[in-house]
Length: 146
Image (cartoon, helix red, strand yellow):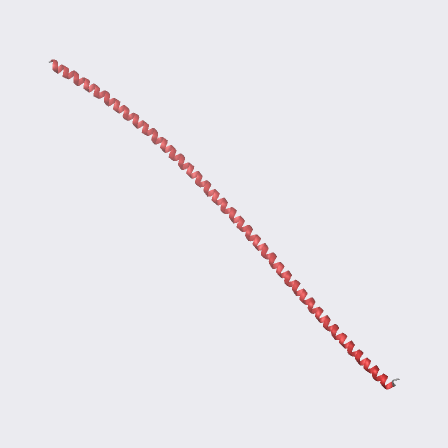
């Protein structure tokens, strides 16, 4: 059997060990809570960082989409200006072709009129020369008869 002093010592030892265990449990619980709070903080920071990155990526996508739309608009504008310029140039060239065709036709008519005039003049001169020859022949014959 154990003595009452020994039971008291044992009880005191058990109580001390129990207190140490409770303190250890409290300390471990506090450490676990700190780690949980730390982990929650890191998760919240990671989520906030991810949300910031998502927001930045969305803004980048929007900016790139806007830039792409602007480039598409500018391209369409350049194409329309090029078409308008080409169309204007085609109209000018057609007008020039028509003016040159009209001028060529006018010169052709003037050339044909000049040829007809030259042919008439040549015909008239030929007729006059025949008349002169005939008159000279008549004079010669008169002169030979005399």
